[in-house]
Length: 178
Image 1: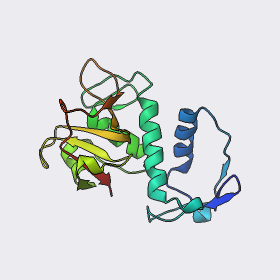
Image 2: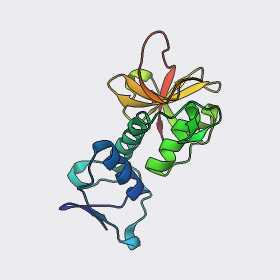
Image 3: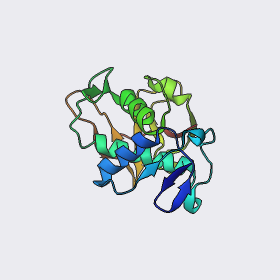
């Protein structure tokens, strides 16, 4: 059983890494976690945890927190990159989901399309992926963080950063990772 303060919750995939990313973003490490290995697996990403919050909501928060942290680390765009030394757009999304949610998306936008439930950009929720290009032929992907903003590895010569959705470079669709 995993505990956080006085609330008892189920263990989430990659919880220690998720908490470390959260603590780094929040600048604190006051919450203590203890995990009983007998109950450390979670197969249903929508299981209810303390306070009525779902594991999928927790996963989305972990994804958003890690994405925001990476946007502050001056990570350069590197075509084909998927590390803190450099990343491209699909490398960023794959890295974040692997480290914050223990989900492998693959390193190609079209492959990542197959891992989401598509929806209009207007229905995007924090943690969703944003895609540019027609389904089956996307050429760019980013992580929606809420308030009309997303984290992206934009292009050569730029770093991973937070950007705002605008009419000049509008995503074509969004998707919630399955």
